[in-house]
Length: 150
Image 1 (cartoon, rainbow, N blue to C red):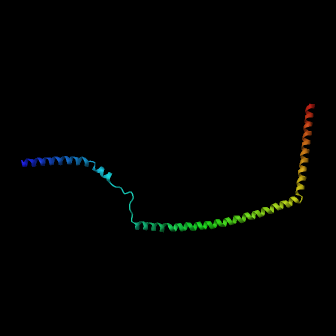
Image 2: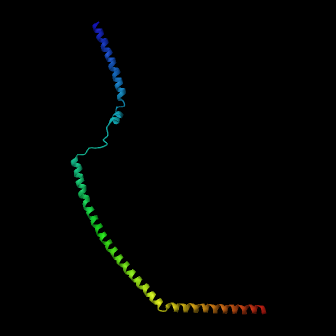
Image 3: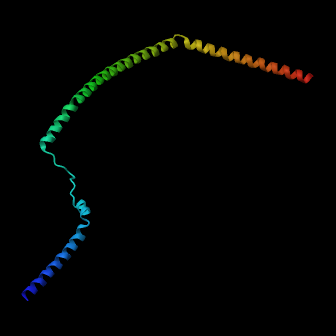
C-alpha cells in the first residue's frame, strides 16, 4: 500500500510536470518576440564628463580660428564702409555748395536783363504766330473765293 501511494503520488507529479511543460512550451513559443518586446532601448546614452569636456575643447579649437578670421574680415569691411560713408558725406556737402553757387549764378543772370530778353523773344514769337495765322486765313479766303468762282 505504501508503495502504491508512492506510485500514485509519483504519477500525479509526472502529470503535473507534463502539464507544466506544456504550459511552459506554449508560453515560450513567442519567446523570441517577447525578448524583442522586453529589450530595453537606450534613449539617452550616458557619456563620461571627460569625453564631453574633450569634445568641447576640440570643437573650440577647430571653430575659434574661423570665428577670429570672420571677425577680422568684418572689422575690415566696417572700416571700408565708414570711409565710403565719410566720402559720400563730403561729396554731398560739395554738391550742396555747387548747387547753391549755381542757383546764385542764375539769380544774378536773371537780374542782369535775361528776363527782359526772354520777354522780348516771347512777344516776337506771339507776333510771328499772329502773322502766320493771318496768312493762313488769307490763303483760305482766296481758296474759297476761287472755288466759288469756278
